[in-house]
Length: 341
Image 1: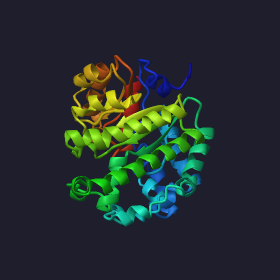
Image 2 (image 1 turned 180 degrees about the horizontal axis):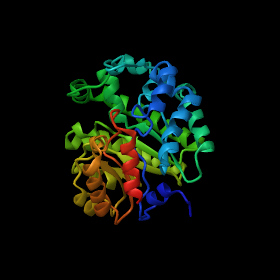
Image 3 (image 1 turned 30 degrees about the horizontal axis):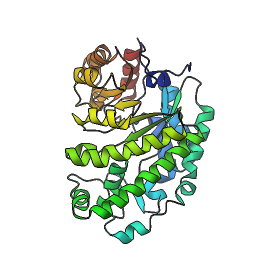
Image 4 (image 1 turned 135 degrees about the vertical axis):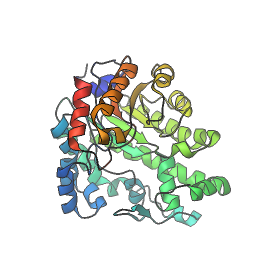
């Protein structure tokens, strides 16, 4: 039996205290991260520099002794690896050359994907060799729908109108893009497993904006294929899905995809999750990241409730999304100590 608490939780074991790690645990709230970020060049330069990416992945592990480290990278390395222009502008977020025509898809090069993403895979390999023996290594990717929205919109969006227009107006073009992204995601995650990742998380950050039938077709169906193909090739790998904002569709997602773990956003009612989801998969989440920034009594009470309601079954303590940059590092320390006391 593994000594790694995260792997035991994802195998269905109930533990007290549960394992804990946080989304975006390596990031701008840490002064040591900001120091590295300042010397790295662009954000993508940091993602593609194994020396620096390994260092920033280790930083929160040194500070808080989390039960897992998540590879430091970004979901948009996949479109970049396929040959699209991707950059990150300060205060603006990601900027991509938007996709709108069939000829744009002709330029996507899945053959060269893993060669271009070799620096990220090197980071995974080094992390697998240097993390503490009790710390599990999580690799990740964006789910195809979420990555597709960035590629079609050319960046972030408030209403995702261009993505939905293509989905409904140009269904063949959209289906082809999704197929390319699904295949690319499988190849990329498989390479992460080969490099030493023990758990894979798929972030479907924008799945919650899809209507029911489209959610089934474009959030659930690609994930069914991704999980099935990866499990067929790597039976030991544990997979966590995060369909943020999925609401009642969380249950369909868990049943259909057969993920080992499901990450919950902060809008999911805890009792409902314990009753409807925990018998099917290990739960992960779902503290509001703002609570960690606030700290104090409000944070303590939320942590206690989380452990009371979800701690009776297989559970991983985490947030409902990533740590926000204004979070005081001492509040993260308080959170971890409260979980482990």
